[in-house]
Length: 219
Image (cartoon, rainbow, N blue to C red; front, top):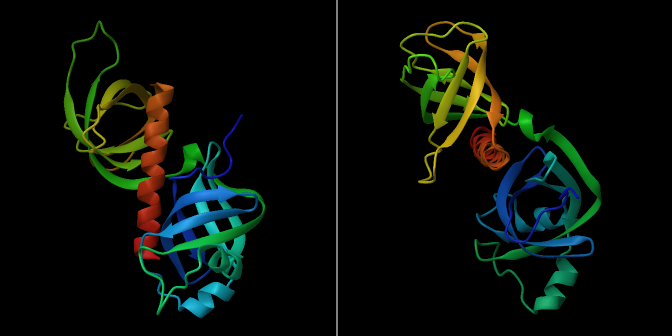
């Protein structure tokens, strides 16, 4: 069964449409609500935030999804016996009362992010002389990547094995792909053709996390 709603511990974006996005973490859930720890201070004044129609944006098994709702302020304050003082802080938790079903914004394989990750390309055919090319992935999604820094650019439809360092100290993602696009200079587009399911999930989560931060930074 597909996971459509956030889990406790997931990091989401709490959004005031056309205004700002705030990073939050799910600390509890229940029928029709999520309790969200604020990981940063909202710029929106507290009274306005409590009156606004809000959304949460998160990743589920289908891709990037969104749900609409509002802060359930009176009920939440009665349940904890505390207010928010002069404003929200990184230690505050708010209750988001959601309505409706998740709306799919982008399927997982289409979530893209600008990156700069070390990449090694190898010959795909074991019978070929193995030529190692050190390069970088500069754009990444769950379905492929844009590669830069090739000393010798492969031809269109060439198959290549790869090792991609995600930069988090974990084992590199290993797989194979096909050159599907030739760009100017030393750039090529590589479409994944053989990547394990666990590594696909790692790539998708990385692309989502980085694209989320990039959208917030340049919003």
